[in-house]
Image 1 (cartoon, rainbow, N blue to C red):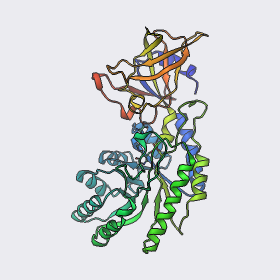
Image 2: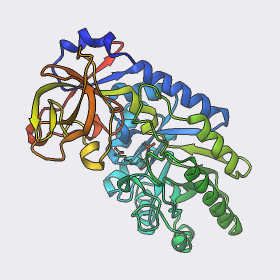
Image 3: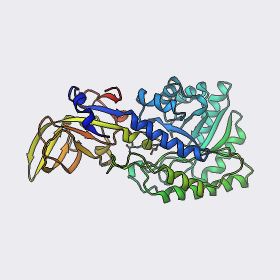
Image 4: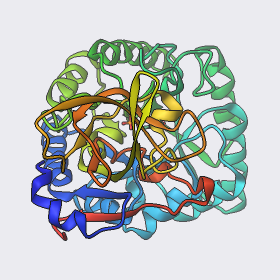
Length: 385
Ligand code: LLP
């Protein structure tokens, strides 16, 4: 990705804006699907990562299904042409309305997280004369060793069904006629950098498989969720996540039964590196022992640094200076948390310079908001520009 190619086009545009390089997206999808299909695995794109219609359209055409976490996401996936048979619906708090939307759409599977939820899905399916396919989202009690806000598989987290709840779950299935158990689902966290964590997950899945087998329950599907990390430090040198090692780890560790299908729900690793938040420097302000580069992009455009302390690479791609300096790169919003990076080394920076905040394609635009009544950033795409 070379910004110089786009400088003239960028200079004509009002900032801040999201810029998506669709060639990077395309290459990422090719790399991902090549490795996925080597093992006959199936993937559902976690559309919470980025639900921009242009991006969704490309992902849908690449042959992936959709992983949804709200009724509106289910509806959007169906409207965008995702085959209902490839749509899965997760979430600890599915409302009746959302469940009805998914039943009406005839989705592939509800990923269920509690006994009361399974009962309600059964009741609503009965009212609509349908049978709902259900995968149990199990909580394997594994720490994904990632940011505390995005680790989801420990027993103290709100997600999933723990082993001690399983007898009650089976009881519900024996009592209810409008649900069918088709598989197990897991998602232990996001931005997981340590492959051993996925190996531990597979060991737990093997354990749960034996648990169900001992009770004569056959499971057709194992869904291992998402979580593959991207390189936020050196994004331009590492555009693609280590998909080969990831699937190789899974294939080596997971013990499958005859005919079982393995599913994944990639989000971040597919879309993070194709997206950039492009901004202009409004002011360089001298602070106490430091300099602030004040951008026209703020936490309302990209909330990850403020919310999770996430660090995104920042590039000043218009400064002609040979000298570098250290800046706190901050936004204009009235919150101290509105900063993209502390002590960031950049080429000498001045008003009007343009910067790119990298790896902004996942959980960027989709989490943006109008706080301070700021406008939502527009999106532009290469090769259009
Ligand atoms: N499946 C389920 C059930 C999930 O909850 C998630 C993400 C995924 C799949 C996709 O995971 P990925 O491949 O993207 O790691 N806003 C946070 C990330 C929240 C992730 C929520 N769940 C961030 O900006 O880091």
